[in-house]
Image (cartoon, rainbow, N blue to C red; front, side, top):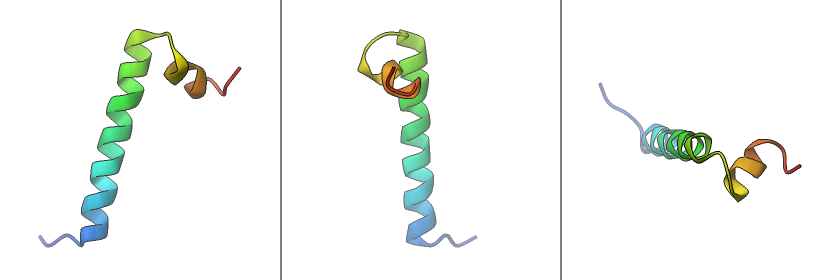
Length: 40
């Protein structure tokens, strides 16, 4: 299977974003979790 550069970049970005969310949920504090909750 051949993947276009765009697909590879999108997949990489999604993976990094998912890891960031998981880390924020694990910590449960700080600006990351506030952003995830909508900035309240």
